Image (cartoon, rainbow, N blue to C red):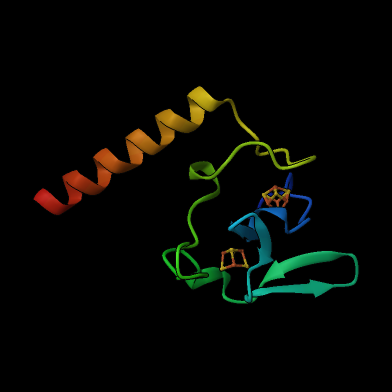
Length: 94
Ligand code: SF4
Ligand code: SF4
């Protein structure tokens, strides 16, 4: 979820995860009339949201949420993950 970007329609779809084929909603997702928001937004990154999932940057997550303006090509997604991992490794080496 990207609260500060005007393009985000705050549908909350990127705040769900799947375990054994069942979709679960993140416990930090809240509703406000017809839209959604994250109540821990400033400290969301790296928060454990299930036994198997952590909240991450939208640019590092899957690209096919219905109607999401932040969807991206698979190539772009892989590049972003690769760039992010390089940056994390570089940060750990300095
Ligand atoms: S913690 Fe992450 S996945 Fe959960 S509501 Fe907030 S932004 Fe969405
Ligand atoms: S799926 Fe896209 S439009 Fe919906 S909350 Fe996430 S970033 Fe915003």
